[in-house]
Length: 229
Image (cartoon, rainbow, N blue to C red; front, side, top):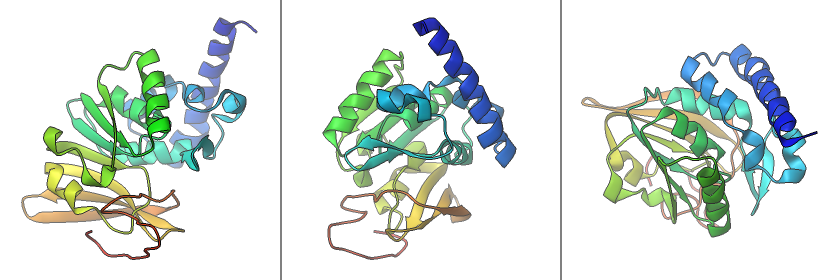
């Protein structure tokens, strides 16, 4: 199979993934569906896993981290209510796939990864795909990216025992923050809206993510749960 034929084959697989795994489960934002159809998910996983890249499950990407199930990526992205003009912060770059989806939907994306090997790998793939509006930093995501704040939307792709306070502080008025909150084994996908009247919370269902490690997330040997860290 030539590279062109392989590319075409994955285009069809992506379209099938979006229809069967995402649209039929209730994700309806047409911009989100187009982004998931466009972004070549297989390029964000090791080549020996390409044939599994569009399956209905997460996949390992190294360093004990995973690329999230496509449906979860779509659900979290839709919950941000992006229109195209936003500045978005992502915690947990991982493979870079979620950042690429956000890059299709927002004006600028700032993404933080604490593991240097994953950050550099993601940066290379994103650059190869031509994303100039995605900025990758290595560091503690729970501290946010204060010099680029405020952010219109914040997406956290790891489970936290609480909503990190710096993220709330760096969220713009009327901004949306989506984060899995819970213990180390299961979390509730939570959307926080910052309004003039205070914070509003929506609960989007159960989920399970790797731990969000950092000063305002999980720390080694610590098991805690509260709303702010």
